[in-house]
Each structure stands twice: as structure tokens, then as C-alpha cells.
Length: 167
Image (cartoon, rainbow, N blue to C red; front, side, top):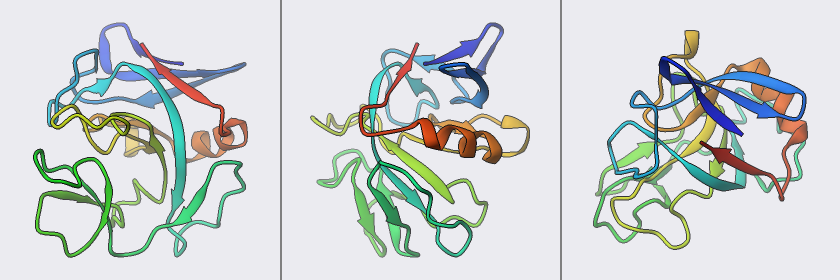
């Protein structure tokens, strides 16, 4: 379960059994009616669909989730109206997209959340991940981000039946 901290909407707590892990949320906090580009983390229940990692920086994590190596040409389409909206794609790509092979390390480990994947609704939200946080847990663009050591602590608890509830 993920909840925003009172008075600090872009900061939250991820509760997993006995663990209470500080996390970063979208700069606009949590919203039930999420829209592309609004900077909010969507409220809802989300399955974990896949774990991706950057092999030149991180060892392959042990996980019951489907695990895939990131490649330098991996991206995620965020272009409203594009046929691949909210889907993984490869560079070069003509429409707007996020690069998953990042220099800042935020996506060295990332878990794709089942947010607006099936069915996909144009403009509802794209590229919602659980990933590594910036220093100081700076806000995200709408994802949930954890300090590297905390994501490492959490990974063994995550499986194919895990659901993240964002309230």
C-alpha cells in the first residue's frame, strides 16, 4: 500500500508487511482522475507486470516477476494519440517517448505497474513505474520511487500476485 504523507503530497510511505518505506510520489501528489502530464501518481490497484534492469550497472535481480535486460534503444511511448501510447518501444521512434536507458540511474531497476495497460485509454497515463529515487526523494513525474537500498529490500517480497494499492 502507498499513501501520501499529510502535508507533503509528493512524499509517501510504502507499507509492505512490517516494512514502512519512505517513497517519492508525483509532484502533484496522488489523484484518482489521472491525466497525461499532470505530474500526479494515479490512485488505484496495480499489478506488477515486469522487472527491467540495466545490465551494465546492476546485476540481474532474483525475482519471480518476468525479468528483462534494458537495452540502449528501449523507450516507452507517452504520445497521446499514437498507436503505441503507453507501450514499450524502441528508438528511434517518431512520437514522444521516454528513454528507459537513462544517465541519471533512475531506471537502472524499474518495475512496470499495470496502470492503463489493459484497456489503454488515450491520455489517461503512461509510463507509471516503481523505480529508483532521486537524492532526497525528489518528486517524480507520476511514478513511485524508492531509495536504492529500500527497493533492494522490497524486491524479494514482490511476486506475480503482488498488487500495489495507491490511496
